[in-house]
Image (cartoon, rainbow, N blue to C red; front, side, top):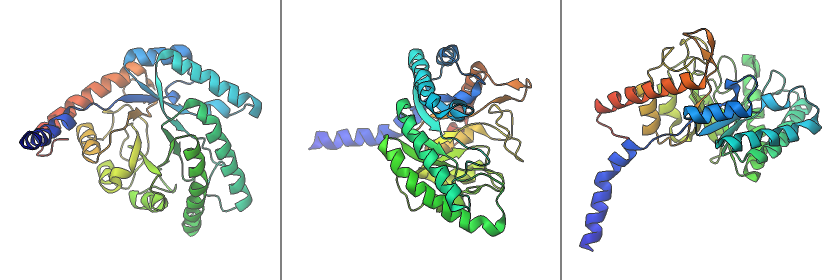
Length: 302
């Protein structure tokens, strides 16, 4: 009994160190490349990425339905050949592909299309499926109905996510979109405990990302990482905008997040060009340094 007590005491003492030292794996979206190839995947793996998010918009637009499935499986082979794992799939979105539209017949068409895409995504074996709760613009006098519609659509689609063994995650969005505040997004997902939140670090435009983490907390199941100017979404490489990234990583860990540090970054603001794998890895190394400095000054070790 004494040995058991001593062992438990050791675990309790060592736990803060274990959590503090625990690494978060890193990943990037396929949208980093305009045309992601097998070479793209190999370069990402060599740069240091272990995970990928598949931006499904790259694989179904302007293609006849019979060609979508073969293209998905072909790309899965490219990912596998590079030794990268699929963490998430970003489900389709557009101005018209909106799960909250007031027109019931159009909404039914949209969610049935989305359900079909989810079934096709089984080939990727994703952990997470990222879904937009709406498109935009949304007028104030339509907002409540659009929220109700979005909730109904999520209720329908969550069963399809479960069917392929993935967690449905609803993304916070900017401007007039649904889920543009943590309170509204939590309201949208509150009835579905198995549905998570995808936290996009440059989408909460009326508050700070740290406020979002504080409110959403353990409901955050995956993230989209990029920086911005504090005014509108920019999708810049982290440390090129206004976010304090040491605090960001610290707050995410403190909230209990143990998922992938998933870059959804496409723009290199400093160089005025498309972001690259190497530049993202460089930014992550500096973020870890900032995190270590931040952790040293904090009373909370996570």
